[in-house]
Length: 294
Image 1 (cartoon, helix red, strand yellow):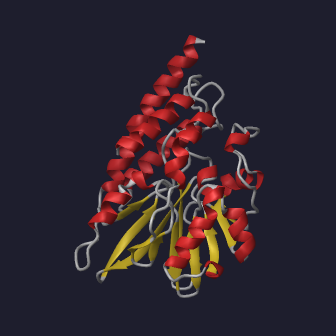
Image 2: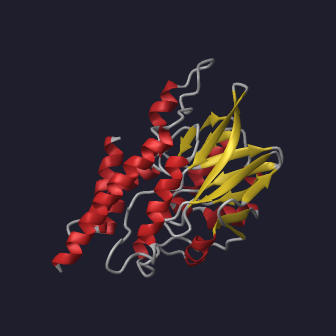
Image 3: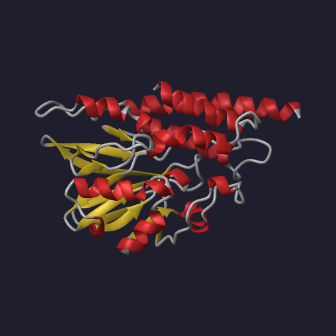
């Protein structure tokens, strides 16, 4: 959690317009962790972790092929493909690629993997222009935040479903972190029990401007609606775009044959959403104060 706090502080620092740390500086600081390898493993049910030590990527095994959830930085695409192979799965079997949000650390491998597999890319409808333009909203010309543009085959909104074989995921619009930020819910079998899993998009302020010239219109209301929605959801397993969101490494170390799965933790999402909401209020206050000083 200390590493997560440091990352959030750095992002918040950037978002308030401080000049001591540039986006390039920040990316250089986090890149080692974001690109460090991590052994792939079966997380729960038919969900597998294939990401890096600092960026979460998931593969969902279905009766008719694989669903890939997000990617990582462009330079990590080969590592992710190797992780999939280490699990005895085939990259060629990826039929659907799902996106949580259109930021470079989660979209970097889309274009390459889509070209290799012919998989269908599905994303929140408000993130489509970002993905197809390869840019960060409100900062379209910043090359430091750019990523390989990729065609979106299908867009989704609240309640839409994506099905492959015996597996169905439901899209939940959770905007704020990006305009089309989409969280994905599915049910898995765990020891004979059904568990509700949520791949939570994100709720951090990150590089977003909330006041003055906001990253996009309505961003403050979007964040607040997302926090309220997340707090009300009944979820057994919280997953997220970065391992620190849900303590992946610590839970992975606790996994033992015959023992309860440590990733099953009802109530974790509500607790996390509350902390995000509190941090959001602090960042909004800081950005408002900084704007008033100008």
